Length: 309
Image 1 (spheres, rainbow, N blue to C red):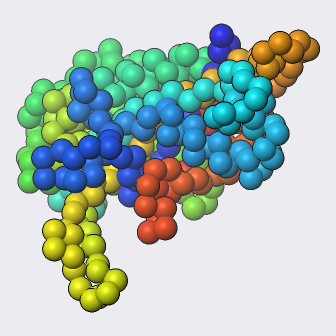
Image 2 (image 1 turned 180 degrees about the vertical axis):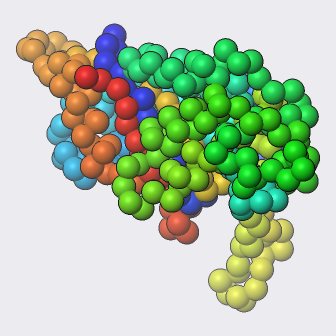
């Protein structure tokens, strides 16, 4: 049983391709999406694999096998003591007429985050207060009062080609401040974006977030080159989808007590000790690579960990 939990934020620094493994419509390499919402997500198995590689560099193989679990085909098999849940969408960046871009979210996205925070022992009062205020209609956008003068003209907010009636809400200010402080790292490198998020968070309806999350991803064409001729292969054009930079995802990292190999007793590390080591590992790593196309700079994400005493 996983008794210790931490909330883990993933902030995309570069486009991220966590592939779905099958073509979708005109996109040959789509990203992973939830069936019921259509929103992007990071599968926990992919996250665990990437962070296992990070752990091997910092801890060594022996400790990784004890806590993450042994390699496939190992003689001594036992379950690992560390689990990563799927990372769910929290904030999706979208181009705006003013101030470059804004971060979009919705009532369901924020309440799923609040639910994960509660599991990690965190009371996200700012998110609860925003939920009590209800939610915007499809033609409304709730914005922070701090960013109203910067984003709004004539009472309207323009995101991509869509025009929303802007409603400045103090509850959005509080939620934006909480997200800026918790989801983004406290380093100077992220200071500009923390300030921007505190002003430029936009809450739209769940349906509108679904639309932007479907049509606002980063799709890039690739051409396969024939080594012999140096020209494009016939049929070598394909399209790869990525989660855009500045997107924010969140999930849980959980720990149980260490499990001994089958047939061997002995007392292993406690869950609180393991999760503490994992927390230190993630904070020490800072920025990691997730998903495919690593050699072309894809998949860099900044990690932030919350929870515990």
